[in-house]
Amino acid sequence: MKFDRCSHVGVAFLSLAFMGQPALAQGLFPVTDVDRDTVPAGTPEAFWAVFGESPKNEAERTVKGEKITFVPLTLVKLPGDVTALVSTGASDCDAHACSGINAVHYLRRSKDSYRYVKAGEWLDVGARGTWGSPAARWGTTDAITGTPVLYTQGGGTWQGYSCDVAVLTELGAKGPVEIARVPIYYSDASRDDGPTLRGTIAAAERGRSFTVSYAGSDSFSERYVRGADGRYSLEGKTRMKRC
Image (cartoon, rainbow, N blue to C red):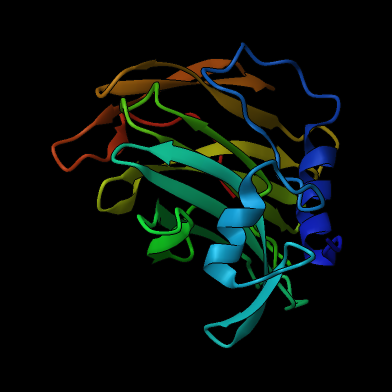
């Protein structure tokens, strides 16, 4: 698998942005950097079922006029004998305004050959970065809604201001549904004493709310509450800075 330049930029930005920052409270679930050079165990079979035979476990596709290189990220087991394949796609676009793609495919086992068969496809899921990068960090959890939720994180830097957003996508029976967008990182490098804040999802009341704890130049927590439409919205006014 090749190491994509655009993916490298997104991951490098996150690594530099988080260096030397105060440690946060333990998160509700693990969130790790996207590693587009590593092929996770079990993913090739699913990846080939979606994108065709791919000896290097990467597949190039044109999406909305842009050339995207997909690689597998993870498999998520869903109810009803469904498996979700999550892939990240880096764009060959070399402009700051360009973004990559995160894809989710639902797969089932065929009854005759027991091979994976594609049951659904959703492109452009979750958070993305700049310079053609897909999500830079990811995680999964069932602690928020009781069903699997995909966490993706991405962002960029604009004139010294760096911001990241975390997107929560519930992997439901009818397909992925975005349920929350949370500002998760902010840094102002335009001045020597510029503030830096980063957050983590620290707790949840399953199906009702979750809490984001922030640390850095300031320390505080904010609560997101689930509405009748299934989405989570901030309770009250935010103290988190934005670009």
